[in-house]
Amino acid sequence: MNTVVQTTHGQLRGSVDNGVHRFLGIPYAAPASGANRLRPPRPVQPWTEIRDATRYGAAPFQLAPPESAGTEWDTELAGDDCLNLNVWTPDPGGAGLPVMVWIQGGAFEIGSTAAYDGRNFARDGVVCVVINWRVGADGFLDLGDGQANVGLLDQVAALEWVRGNIAAFGGDPGNVTVFGQSAGAMSIGVLLSMPRAEGLFRRAILQSGAAHHAIPTETAQRIGGLLAEKLGVPPTREAMAAVPPQRFLAAQAELKADLFAKPDPERWGRDAVAGLMLWQPTIDGDVVPQRPIERIGAGAGATVDVIVGTNTEDWKLFLAITGVIAKVTEQDLADSNSVDGFPPMSAYGLPADVAYREYRSHYPAGSPGDLLAAVETDWWVRLPALRLADAHAAAATTARTYMYEFGWPAPGLGAVHAVEVPFVFDTLDTHSRLFGPLLGADPPQELADAMHAAWISFAATGDPGWPDYDPARRTTMLFDTESRVIHDPRAWERALWEGIR
Image 1 (cartoon, one colour):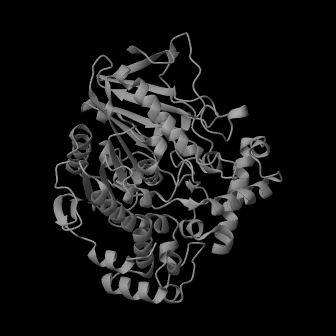
Image 2 (cartoon, rainbow, N blue to C red):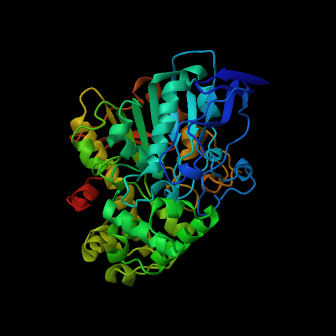
Image 3 (tube, rainbow, N blue to C red):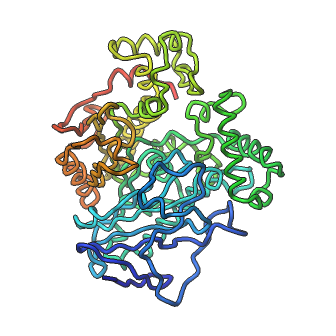
């Protein structure tokens, strides 16, 4: 069964399954090719015939294919026409439904809309949108030419499309919630602070990412210059855009290999070394005027309701899946050695002896790899989340702030990065090649019911179902098989990291 809607650019034909209407591969900006390559998004050209919207659109060019062999993601090819999005709605003829826009993660290097299915949000009365945006150097090349952060501008263009078109799918353009995980959540932290994103969303949910990770433009321009050297072309947007995409990606892979081989902060910048991420939002003074957390503390995003949180053992995932966690020794921690290219404990700002002493005292049974993972978790996501909650709660007047922690342990791993995503989407597919390995044989459906319902309640009303956060009590919802409200669960980490970026 097909269904047709009228957008500002032309008609779209989607599909219907079990009462959910699905529209895939909708362009929200012109193809990022030719004169548009490596440049801010341009408007979509209207079409006259009814456009088929029953298949996924192109994914952004990216360093490596996602870990998703055998899924729908395999049918999606990377290409210039990647600035597209998908919509699930219960009723295109309806009106006033809450809207949720998912901004996916992937270290600012990978991503595909086909990895996320919004049907269960639509089943439960929400218009769900999942967007593509440019990643890697395609999205975050900074050459000092006034055109940095085009990946963030892609996200703004997608949100502008939502504002202008979502009513045609039954959604309320005045009640939009952006939600995202990892680099998607970090993007939302930046969007909260961005003048160009002001007014485009009413609520925000940040999962394992906040408002700290944006690099100085000097660092970003140095990395852009190193990429130009790899390509053998002048460090100009015109010259680099003329390089074929596969060579462009290969040069990025070579540059990242150099970073892993010699993670020298003097060459790459501390943020790139500590995070092992070359491509991030850059503080360019225009799109991103200053560090996002500082602007939020000064009142940016103060009218937006916010949920922010992390997973209990978040960053352990990366040390575990690479096998590095078993290679870390007590001596590595004491001497602050790097292991297989992963940054040493001292890379995160705490003196190595202090970090070792404190984390060993709080994790007496933890392996050396567990301790390093705990430090990484706190630096990457936990402290940024707490500081965002503090800043937003202090600056907001009518808007509310909420904090959560996801504690259900993935079998054999713990409550690691990304394990909460299928619970949020209520898609506990244990056969999924992307999230299935995190779920085990029998993930708790009641936890998915609770988390999915809380996200929808927040999107619809601004209230997820637990008390809001304030610096006096630091109320936090702990999601687990027996979810409960706790208060100030991370007091020692806050004290330890006070004043350390």
